[in-house]
Length: 98
Image (cartoon, rainbow, N blue to C red; front, side, top):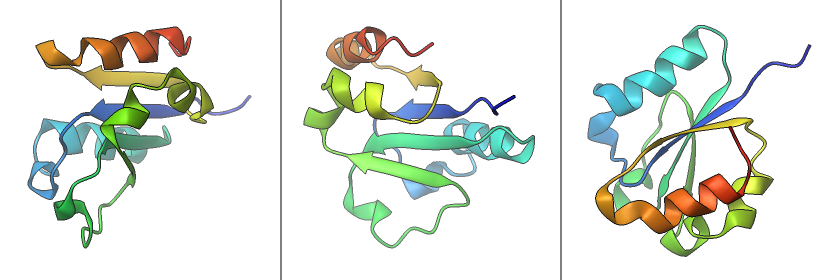
């Protein structure tokens, strides 16, 4: 049986969040054997950052594209939303990821 893979979406992730919930969730899932990546918007603080997990950093426009979410190899998206992220939420839901 194939392993379940997860993408955690945090719109604005910064290296300082590694020790907070957003980073620790990704780290913890990987530690218990669930392959997990973080999806976020590109920002300059990520350029030299060496995280203990994989990060997919893309433009806001790509996050609005249902095809982006459909093409992720992950089976499930765990998303943390702000009230202004409804368009991204709809793109994720249309991708049919659980």
